[in-house]
Structure formats: C-alpha cells, structure tokens
Length: 108
Image (cartoon, rainbow, N blue to C red):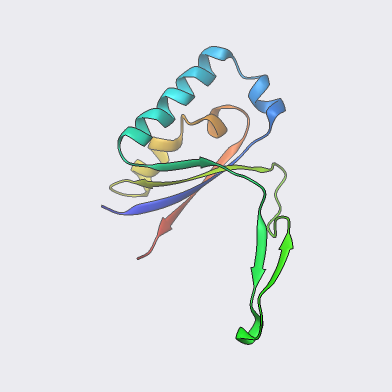
C-alpha cells in the first residue's frame, strides 16, 4: 500500500481556541491512525545537517523551512491513494485546530 508523509503545522493558540469536543475527536483520529500502523510524532527542535561535497559535516540548530505556523508534527501513513490519505488526516489535530497538514506521497 502506498505511504504518505504528513507535516502538521499549528500553534497552541489555534489548539486552545478549538472546542474540547473537536480536539478529543481529533486525538481519537490520530489514535486510530496509530492503530492502523501510522508512525506519528510531535516535532522537536530541528537541526540542519549539511555535508558539502562530502568534505565535512556542518550542523546548525533551527529549522530551514519556514511557514506562517510552526511545524507541530509528522506522520507516515498508509493509504490507497492521495484522496484516502487526505480523508485520513482531515480530522487530525492540526487540520481541525486552525492549522494545516501537508500530505506528500512517499516514492520508494
């Protein structure tokens, strides 16, 4: 079955202004995705890694990409196609709590 990488963006303010009932349903959705085998995690502090021309590893703390909302988490899910992947994440916390989720097909 095809795999998809998802990137959730959201912040505490959006989460807090979402009703408890909606948040609880969103967390139940994530629990169901985990039960189906999804790997889901909350984003920690990133480190940029470079190794130009394989001459030496350089690291820098902090994100490379930027967005209006911070990265909140990642998941790897399985779905029959993009439409199903979208359906599966459309009720996840970032999607319902005033954030957004990107869905990327993982080409193996």
